[in-house]
Amino acid sequence: GWSSVEFVPERPGIGRTPDLHVSRPRRRWAVECKRLMPSAYAAREKVHGTALAKAVHELSSQLGRSIVVEVKYNIELSSVPDDYLVRCVTEALDRRSRMPWNDEVAAGRVRPVSWGLVHRVFAHDFVYYGSSRMIELLSGAYIHEADHSMAARWRPAPGRPFYADAVDQASVVSWICLAKEAKNKKARHFKSILANAEGQLPADRPGVVQIGVESGSGAEIAAARHVRNILEARPFAPTSSRLRWVYG
Image (tube, helix red, strand yellow):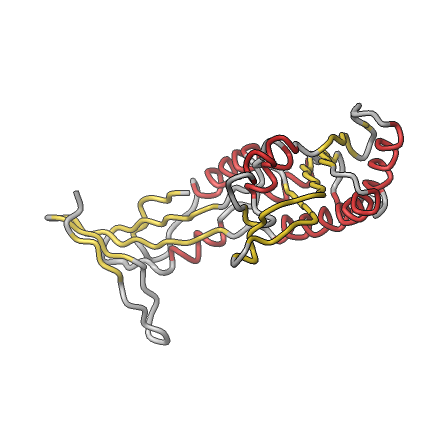
């Protein structure tokens, strides 16, 4: 029902401006949009998880066995020994058992790749290598709140070098960190971004701040972040603007 929505030109070196002016008869509002990027902690955690998975991919390739490894870490990944995961996977393969392991560091299991599903799809489709779709095919399901790492021997599609036409050996490692410390560090709130956005709103009309938040770490962390955002936004006092609403 808003009859006018206009982008506001930036004025570098002159003054800060909102992103949008919206209006309809007798009502004018300013809107500033921001984005909360994933936390630096989450990025470091992904690096640690990928390093732990690399040794598993090398083992899988050396043995010529296609496997899916699913892990739930009980401690922060920075504290996991470098050879922990590959040792657990090696022991599981030696036992020829799909029974999960469970210790103070993590719980996990090893199972074969879902070749039936892979072959049915590759019979008529190309799949972007390393994509969530390929991980879904190899694993049989895609766990959205998990981080993933995969490696494979594959054949590029004719004329489409980033798409796979066939896969003959693969390994997938999917992991989640359940450590309370990790969850708190990843559930970063948006107080500093809110303060920055509020400074771009004018004083001559009411304002709205919209902050987009990535929630790749799963619903539990997103919910914790949402609560923290509410607690941070509720007492927030505008400095010079007429801020009325904050959307997260």
